[in-house]
Image (cartoon, rainbow, N blue to C red; front, side):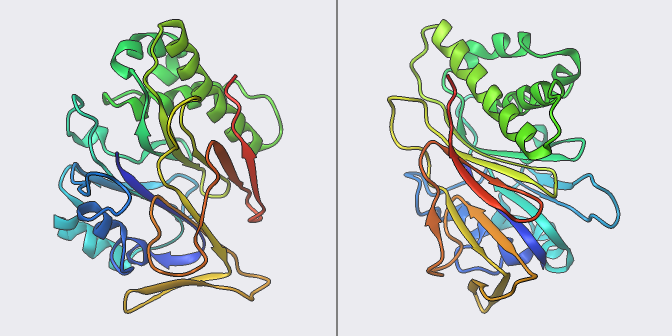
Length: 286
């Protein structure tokens, strides 16, 4: 069920994530190593930020397989950004392959992508929509569980009154996840939700690795940190040592054999603040 990669740090070319690594996101689109089905060919998307121009993300996505889109390859070779989200899609059975259903999704300055599924989505879809305010409901243009989850986040974030943006992002995302689980419980649905999520505003970011209580482990998710990220002939690594430069990578599967990759703890969230402070905490949806 999909793969994604997230980067924040010194500006890099999109190709450093999409085409250059030995296990790049394009490589994962036809040869995923940590899914039973290795293909993720139901479209792709990339979101990136150019902060000197605007605080809103640029989004490029298509329904073609990532491995077969020359526009993606050409774009990735020349565009540089300090904050990037790339996603390849394996559509949930029953949901159409269409442009509006490709990730990432955006709202204002936020970019969002999902690996996994909302358990029993078709049975609770109308209830999820009923819990949305008008503005968040009007964000829905497609039919995916992922976009509904993002609309839930937008609805909750719109009601946040605190002063910390990243805490507002984290609490609103957990509220969205909790709403899903509460509605499932009310309807007697025991199908697990698998919610590996990435949410960023280009400065602060929240990433989750989650599976419904009492079910199997969440999908794979890895973290890598350092000072700068380089790719040379398919060998990619994050350098250490700089006090002024910081870089963070989060990916469904490691992009290369660099030894710095570590698994994100199951049922936890990673908060990456604008000063690159990284905090991991347990997710409590009850």
